[in-house]
Image (tube, rainbow, N blue to C red; front, side, top):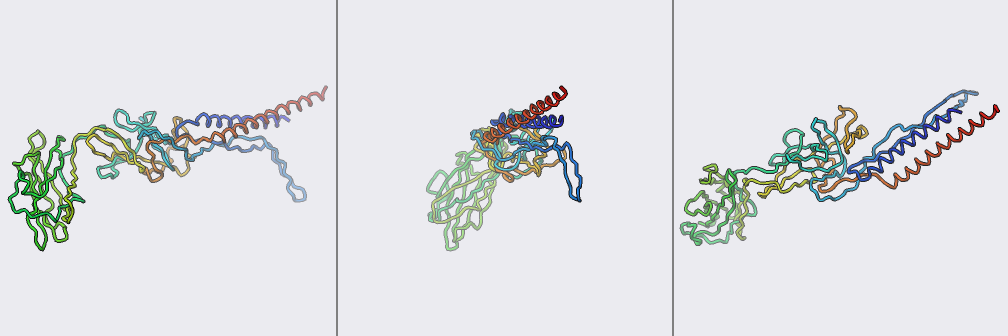
Length: 413
């Protein structure tokens, strides 16, 4: 008779623990990136005996109640909340963000509330540093996995190369000019256009490109290019001859070098290579479109994160720089992850190696969004009622057992 008391107690204990899990899920309904837990019950055996009669087994099995064998996490996708903060991130799909504390421990999380600290590091609400890879100027990953640092300022870069690219065009319908070129006389050239370049201190300088058509024949056309700096029309800093075939394709004249002499304390002289290989000469209006590789000092004015996890810094000099690409980790068996509080997980063995990929491969990175808790309130309320009734039923078993035991005691009387 006493066995039924202990059997009912296991039911009380198990359902009490289930209520604890349910209450934890409900309490975290507004926790960013929270993943709900569910319980798994298993039965206990108090007595099991098998006998045989006429070679037929006869089983006598009396259960000893139930217990919670384990809790499992529901890693299904939570809905997104728009925050309009570019450093708030959500993973649309598989994986976890990787963050590292000051002791070097790497944690895994779905909570993407990040910000820039005073050093330019991307950190979560607990100051742990978001992990990723640094990118070079061409967007290639360099170095090992490490913290993501966005510089608050970038130093000036001297201009070393100018590229005249498509759709740059010299109008083939232009008249040939036989007069000697004079930058002060507009009748001695066909076109002029200007662009800005930078010295080693980041000072801007204006280069003016003058184009003069000097010849046209059955085999093609010839143009002269003259370059002046900072409206100083007395000192030519470079020149070149451009030859085009009858199809308007450049046949000679690229590249050429500009030699600049600066008097403002910057590196002197400064040489700039001008690549004109993309210039065309067709019957269309004159177009001047040039790129150059220099810029002035820039201060950070904004951060953007692309779907592939590339973090860009936007600077006051107009430069948009690829800074880093964040890392996304996943595990073959996510039940190996153990909750450590503060929305953080760790594998239950330090030798359990995650699968680490750049953002955008396992999942897309949503900038300006946060992933909400995936707790289903309606389901939790149903579980709450079920757990409550199960607890009450087990308590009633104990009450009934007590009444039966009392009747047994009354036999003696």
